[in-house]
Amino acid sequence: MLSYQHAYHAGNFADVHKHLTLYAVIDHLLRKSSPITFFDTHAGRGLYPLKASETQRLGEYRNGVLPLWQARESLSDEPLLAGWLEAIAALQPLAGRLEHYPGSPWWLSQRLRRDDRLQLFELHPGEHEHLTQQALPANVRRIHADGLAGLSAALPVATPRVCALLDPSYELKAEYAEVAESVLGAMRKARHAVVLVWYPLLPAARHLELLERLRDGGLRKIWRSELMLRDPGEERGMYGSGMLVVNPPWGLDERLAAAMARVTSRLSETSRYRADWWVGE
Image (cartoon, rainbow, N blue to C red):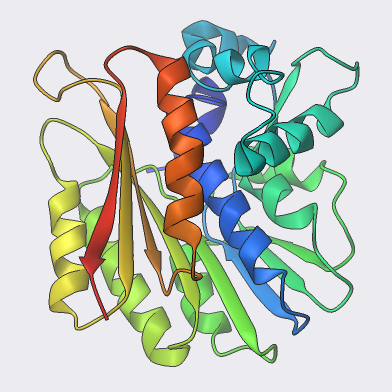
């Protein structure tokens, strides 16, 4: 199924959770000089104009990045969140106006060093066409293919370090199991890799299959964080956003906890954040 287009949801609270986590992981990884190969298995368009008809239709960014953007001066004392918002500000065509929201290809590519590499996979033909129009560094490859299969085929890599983001739409129930098997397969080929997995929190709780398969697959050092806008039983639809990080950099949990405390205070009175080790060492 190739119907999902992230433009309808760009800049929502799940993007804030996912991309702030990704930003923090990249920040940690770049503290060492050895080259990194990055993978994005479900890249999307790369950049989302917030005035686009798809984005305006649901306007989910209004309860996501927008309240943080509007409060950015008062959030400047929180280092991780301030850096993330400064990066977004640098992207805008007009200073002080939030007109574009960056997708994961932008977050991954903007800080690439000369010897780093990035492979962006996108299977949807229309989304891939949008991606090809984005201005990205020369050490970025845009690949029109299935990202889970592409990640498996590309490993192992020549660089000493690997970081992968798996961010499917989960439109199909089978994707939870497929993502788990892809992570397990990737870790068999590159046990040192840092792997990030996003998943939605829905009333049906299908994400538990993903979590349990990873735990039962024998992986260690899986850190979990979840941002919830409301309780699951209040209404239909996605009530929260989940992130797993396999082999998380040291100190990631504390930095994100501090930033997310400020995020939840800006999103809604019912929003909350929790994080723990899904599987420890």
